[in-house]
Length: 70
Image 1 (spheres, rainbow, N blue to C red):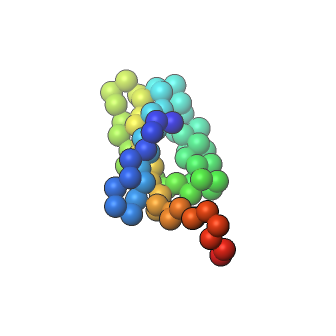
Image 2 (image 1 turned 45 degrees about the horizontal axis):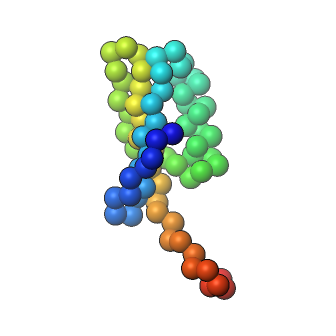
């Protein structure tokens, strides 16, 4: 995955899927990202060669301060 961008309350990360990736495989990859990393699908772009670019987003988590007891 490429580096993400933080915009306000959201963190965005682009993901490029090559043309040979089936829709089912792409769905599985995105579901894993959602389940284990908290990402959700923000936008999808399909190119003429069959590749896809998707943008994932998630709420920015406030960083915990060292020594802070929660």
